[in-house]
Image (cartoon, rainbow over all chains, first blue to last red; front, side):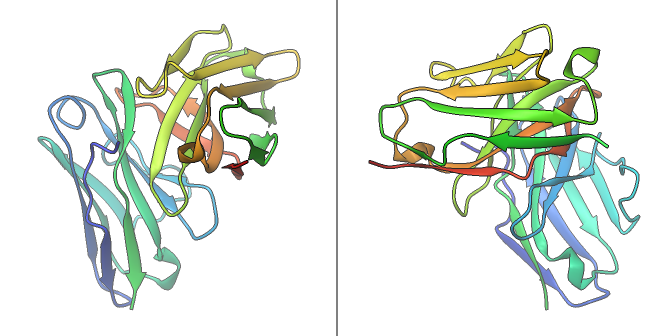
Length: 109
Length: 122
């Protein structure tokens, strides 16, 4: 039922920059802000980015978010082994539904 | 520090009603300012929002599940609950409860429970 499309996987070596895209439509990303969640293996998701580009307290500044039109992106700079996780974008859809992205698995090579 | 803990049966028979409770500690549901939500994750799959509730009882449900979902709140116990009726194997998932902070145009889930696996099987 995901209406936000993400690449299934992304990878990089330690220290590299990795970018994850999130494609939506005018009813979700196009008219509402985007949040990002990180889900480490076997754990509950954790809020990583909110309101397109804001980091909660405690989230390293290696993580950054952006939005343009009906798409959003999450960038991880200086990739570290502990960043290996699943990442989900999310937005409110004007059809009165909260929607998540399909998820992207980040692998540190 | 707010903590949420899901509880309920881990096995439900097809056609029956799935019932889960989320107990909140470190903060009062009735203090307002937050919604309280249920989210599920099918095995090996992505996240699906089920719905959320305000302490006053106002609810918002995923349109795709609305006909089968009821979320309720018990402020005296600082708990909120999920009932999903007429379950099938497709409802097998890890169910999470979470606190929702209304912010900008997309609310954010800032605290999550650890999740509980519910399997639908006879």
